[in-house]
Image (cartoon, rainbow, N blue to C red; front, side):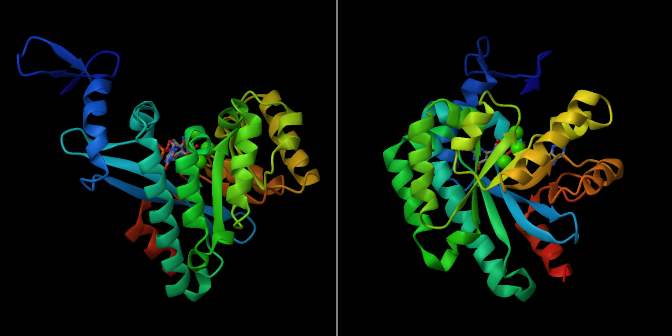
Length: 279
Ligand code: C2E
Ligand code: CA
Ligand code: CA
Ligand code: CA
């Protein structure tokens, strides 16, 4: 397959004259991908900016497609929502991630408080079957549900706020915590935030990227950190890409950060080695 000018793949079908869009091709392959063992998880460390220690890891799904190579979730998770495969994939992601991190907690004594963060889409919260399965995973005390963070975007919650909160509270009843992902980019108002049972704000990387460039982004980042402090929410600023940005966050007294400069996402073997090297 070759990329066309718009960055899409054009696959020729058996007749050779017709084209099938990249998305349509992936849609055909997606239902079998999980059973074929083509999905995998990378983990990205979340760093305590005071101590420099890895305090948590975020699970990020990837698809090793037999012909298209390694695909990022942005390429196939929207499709998974359309096809309904999100239910199976979402259950697999949570199950795999909590087991992996529970193993690290047991095998490395300095990692006994390590938490794991998993992205949850709106559809997983609205499907009763999906929700029941997620709850089943969190009901197992051996995976330590208190060390599980569920990341949901404001936008995902805004579409069905009451149903979303009810679903989240069911998951939280087992001890899991809620992080609002990409905070500041959604459509929800500050009053919506006050209504959400949030524990952590993950500040969208656009605020940090803009901090040194425009006064408005700087004011907003500082405002969000102040607000989070007043609401007693923990904060993770996303997209720490260089030392200047790290210095900005340290100067603002920000609790946690995530980004390529601190540590990029990596396969479990690489992250395990990174954890083992810490003390
Ligand atoms: P997200 O939850 O906001 O995840 C952070 C994304 O930013 C990841 O992209 C990560 O690789 C990337 N990133 C990390 N550090 C930096 C940085 O310093 N700079 C920049 N520019 N980017 C950074 P990734 O892995 O491609 O994931 C994209 C999105 O796909 C995620 O955004 C999340 O919304 C979604 N996603 C990933 N895994 C899952 C999953 O298991 N389930 C669901 N429903 N969605 C998922
Ligand atoms: Ca996330
Ligand atoms: Ca995010
Ligand atoms: Ca995002």
